[in-house]
Length: 116
Image (tube, rainbow, N blue to C red; front, top):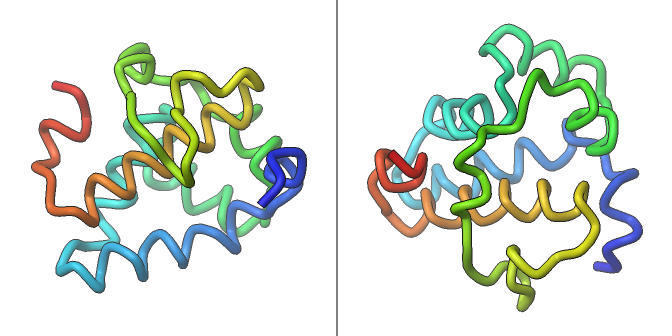
């Protein structure tokens, strides 16, 4: 998918795909929510509100209280692209989230995913 389309994608349409991906690997929606809240600074209630508002990724990250300072520690490849090399700040944030969800689906411990 071209990176210029990512900002306009609705977070609420991608969120169920994140949940389905991890549930197929015996992980939970609560773990997905915990990862998203860790990355963005949203509370669980604020996250649910963002889903209800059907915001796109641009608005989702623009409204986020604060990106976790440890997000810069997220490294690796998502969709054939190194997340740390993505130049567009918004696309990099989306790729951070994709990478965290991939790690959860692969069975990585939540403490390691959250860079603790």
